[in-house]
Amino acid sequence: MPVYSEKVMDHFMHPRNVGEIENPDGVGEVGNPVCGDMMSFYIKVRDNRLADVKFKTFGCGAAIAVSSIVSEMATGMTLDEAMKITPRLVADELGGLPKNKFHCSNLGHEALQKAIKDYRSKTKTKGGAK
Ligand code: FES
Image 1 (tube, helix red, strand yellow):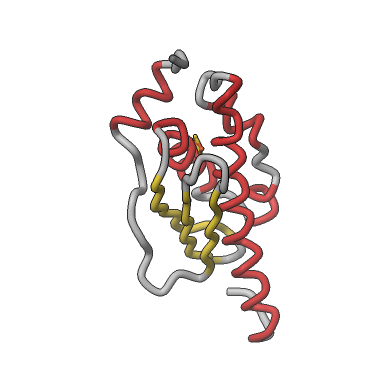
Image 2 (spheres, rainbow, N blue to C red):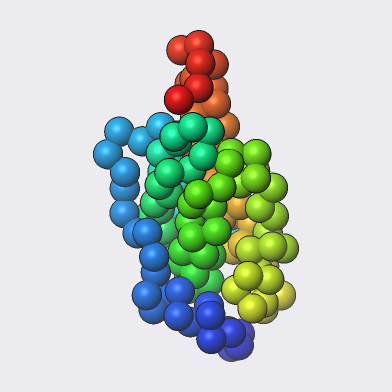
């Protein structure tokens, strides 16, 4: 049985920013074929910053805690700053994750990056950032 930090338990029991954003500027969906967990991130961008970040996660407790903390960390960041959130940073911010749960923090960083890339690819075709 993995031992979770208090912060992981807090974000698992009371996840922040759960849900979907209506008309999101970017969406990132990832899944892990081994554990079957899935995570979706929705973002709103204003002036090159993440004005809102929400998520829906179908997964383990660590994946839910990871989604919650990533959404908190990323909100207010510029897109470039948010792209630099690594799985290690996410795990550190949560006070550590058990080794066999480290892949869960990977999902969070991948889903966020995918949402930002989705936004960037859309604005490129539309010709200009918000
Ligand atoms: Fe797969 Fe946590 S066990 S995301």
